[in-house]
Length: 452
Image (tube, rainbow, N blue to C red):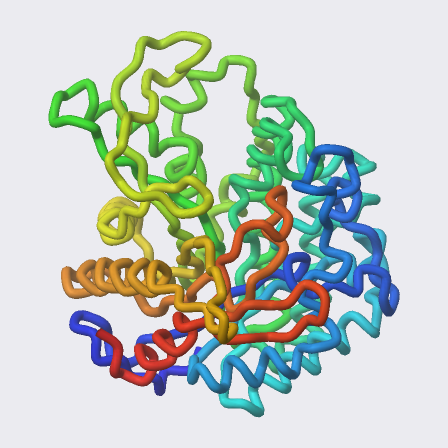
């Protein structure tokens, strides 16, 4: 990543990287163009009731055709890096076999355009858009999907590794496993806890195999993973609430970081779900723990938790406590202090080399005034307070090396359709016109070193 953007925020290193993040299915559109295959989100979004208003990503922000406009916006922001995802179905329509040249060419053009604008491309290999034929064969609960991902990662790195040197294997595998296979509110919409935990293991195995593929195909590249970790705070200082908070961090944090850093799966968490069996084979845990170059952390909110009687409703003995905090349009508490706490917890518990905040942002009403201007002061305050919390953690020795806001553009927000807006830039759903909000100009000033 570029290291020449030098913020003036206290506590951040001089080589700190500022950026923005997006995801392919949320912005690209053109789902039937140039040999792209069908993804699980193409199918899931057409299931009645799965997505608000029956919306889908067929058009999204039309970034597949309008990527040059997006690069121009990034250049105007002055950011040092842009994190985007590569759509697996654009590269292998069926999830295996020879690559689709048109798909690779699209990402070559995007990467070249970013580099010409002085912006480092940072690519995520998987942001939830599994090719539907792989789901038809069993999806992430099946071991073969991890091997298909390793093949896909290798061919992408061989094709694009000369342009892109910063890679993320998976984005938020907790969402892929738990929202997709246990709760059924994300694609593919299954409700089977046993399948979800098999997916946990195969997603992590896929990550480890992708790290090895990166080392082989692009020796000069760096690679990590992006997790949406959660370390809730205890509602009180009572020992039982402190234990509850520790238990609450198992599923979203320890379940992933423990195996990634060679500690195996957290037995305390798995013991609460006796119906779950992790499909570990010889050598798997060593593969999963393949050394990474950095860890990406996505943070939006922090909850308070309290002890609860162990039972079917609370198998791990905790529940979310009442909160006083203001909430975003997603219903999530605005808790900027939690970002610093989470970064410090991770850095003090696992041997992380470097941390990047790879997503952080808030959904707000974003009502335009008569002049068309979106004066999103609530988002500006959200970003300001969270960045200050991150900087505080850095000043206390946490190795945080970069920050990527979510998101550059208002986009398809999964099961919420287009009803939730996270972007620094508003996008007209009919014309595709991009219009920067006030938060865009705030972030530009911050990146330039004049934020406050």
